[in-house]
Image 1 (tube, rainbow, N blue to C red):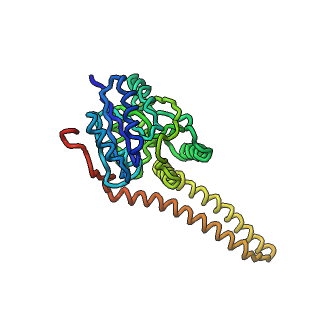
Image 2: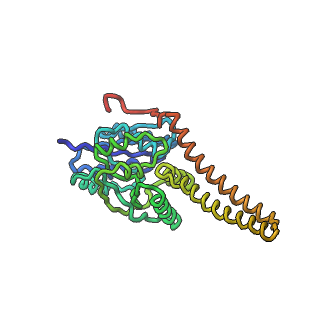
Image 3: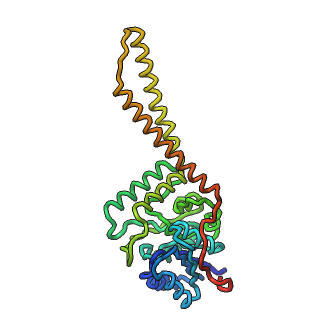
Length: 312
């Protein structure tokens, strides 16, 4: 039976590196003996990325190019690639060469040993700032503390899924997608391949601080109800001492006819409690906003370009 492997690669303004990426991928994956193809998904690039991808498709029969109608974001672009390659094993990876093609043969070897999910685990990133390392470490600690699905630190979206794990992931229709969490959630037998991520070969990271914060929020709100539970616990923590203090005031007034007027402390207390209430109303609002987005049932993406049916 022929082993079929599709490699899904989202691209956004990666014109300077896609040719080198394909050459390195072909050099590494070709000798493994799998029947492999590459599905590039252009995520609304504004440079010559789409032109370079189309040139690759004309030159290589195993290259398929899809282009989204606008920039929908990295997670949606990956999801689009997963949808169009359904039916085969799949590798998800980025085109910037920080997900090194040299890791893919080791992932294929683990897949052949029977593992349905093979995740490449980033040990370190060459040239990464202390801030990026610290925030990444804090993120994984937070999501694993709050969520019920454990996410291995460093195991990002660079992974191989067997055909059945691929189908399981595509069966999850939510809009606010955190794929590394979804991969952990589906279960299946899993293996890990460590790797060192090199510097970006060209261009700049598309994950700005704001986008990273957005991804972290999607992770927390998609995989944990802990923030809402925290509101209940904090409310109880404020209610019980407040009730005891109220009893103290009544007792003092009855026994000593001593009514303490503390307008300053009262206003401060009201402001603190009011601020906490507003904060947790905001947290509930985040969950409601996501429910609202899901209830509209809009398509996740639209293609403005797809391969001809005869090439699909």
